[in-house]
Image (cartoon, rainbow, N blue to C red):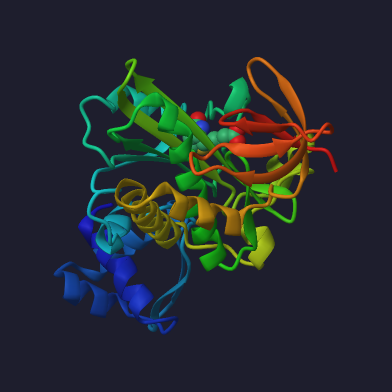
Length: 323
Ligand code: BTN
């Protein structure tokens, strides 16, 4: 956004609902009142709700619900995750864009889009990505082998869940990579990887959070099983500050993953888990397992006891609750 427009918004925000005259804004910016008026007209076209009362001044009633990448960069408290932010108003899929730029981008690069035309979910499903959501992909380059990949998804689930809980949402993790609130989905995570036999080149962590989306804009079969932050806390969340908190939390968890025993992370995951104790049906590429989830191993595999009390350790699969 042009500097003068940004400054006008800053001045109006700062006055907290009290009118600011065109004269005052003009003299602070070194421009005429007529120019201030032209900027205000453009800001209104962008969705800013600016009241003007003759001889008194301008009042900012509401800002459009947009992520502000400049503000995000300014408030971010991380030293790796989000140091390179690519913001787009619309993309096919943030995961696709992240993949295209992954090799030449530094670790911690984040691709964000206001909307996705072709958002992708797990197992080839569509991910509806209407305005108001948090749709982002993070590029990581951990020095791990492929069989440790599912741990990264668990780490991301913890970070998202902690951030949602801090925002007042009663979020819990459904194995392997959904976040639910009282059984309804608020977030999905799509982990994609490029790897050689014994070494991961990069991981793309695609995170989709129903922040301020309108649930009635979702397809019926999805809507029944979904919720949003707005729906849970009764008001829209500021997505810019929310993303700043999410990236901070992701960095904290990623540091733990790299420096601590994985059992510490497993303990945190158990505390936030929605899945432990549930009767489930888990489909893996080569089998279908039905039983009760009784734990998770220090390697991040979920432990299921089937009807014959046979123990199964499953590292990845599609999980459905039976009750
Ligand atoms: C799922 O639960 O099926 C995973 C959904 C992942 C959606 C996110 S939104 C940002 C990123 N870009 C995509 O195309 N998908 C992921």
